[in-house]
Amino acid sequence: MRSAVFGPLPGMTALNHTGVSHTVFYLLGIPGLEDQHLWISIPFFISYVTALLGNSLLIFIILTRRSLHEPMFLFLCMLAGADLVLSTCTVPQALAIFWFRAGEISLNCCITQLFFIHSIFVFESGLLLVMAFDRYVAICYPLRYTTILTHPLIGKIGVTIVLRSYCAIFPIIFLLKRLTFCRSNVLPHTGCEHIGLAKYACNDIRVNIWYGLFVIVSTLLLDILLIFVSYMLILHAVFHMPSQDARHKALNTCGSHVCIIILFYGPGIFTALTQRFGRHIPAHIHILLANVCILVPPMLNPIIYGIKTKAIQEQVALILFPKYR
Image (cartoon, rainbow, N blue to C red; front, side, top):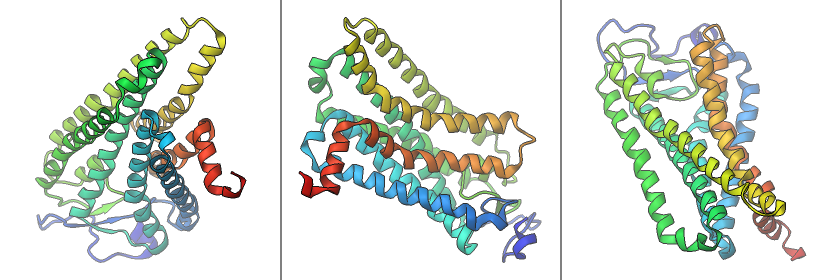
């Protein structure tokens, strides 16, 4: 489709009859909307700048203000860091395609990109589970909160989440490197994705499909289940509190986290459902929805916590308006 609009690109082939595996691929961006790429790039650029500024400011505030060195804010700092990496791994590549038609990417770079994207998704999912546990401890054991979630334990939790995401996604590198990509080297997307790349191989990719499903079940779905259990325990504890004010305050402390959970899992679940059951939906809609999963959470997470958390509001005000201290 891209070649029909812009003319053929060097090395672009619909099918490789030589049996040689492709080492260079071409990302089309959003097929069917090539003439709208410049306009589509505007929300991409705005969301990227917002994510960079918002998450960088959040990290700076949390790391430089000792009053924010509490478990909840340290986990939030980790989330902001992951959002920065996720945005930087994906949006600049998409903008290069939209602005300069620079969609060429080597196989190794493609695998590296999808490794970071998938790893960060698994990392953030695990972090949301830990943040649910943090809220459970804060509400159910408020007097022991800081003694349970100590700084050394938070560091160990962070390392464990990183190792889990790394170990879950690392085998995908070898599952892809074993394949021979002798089909099309034109990828109708703004970035690289495991099965999206594997389906262009001439080999049997059932191992890739089953391992991808295993990763989803053993990480994301398991995390969702444990987050649900955590909040059931939180609600049980909240509704047994003696006063309405105490119940309201306890629920309010969970508001930001619940919003981020919905923002993280909601678009992904909706996208998966449309891919499974929306076979008549145009391809560019699927690609736009996939990009929403990457664009929206990093942009809105710092805004949500900034609006819902008074301590962060105060620190932002001190930085932006120092003369009014």
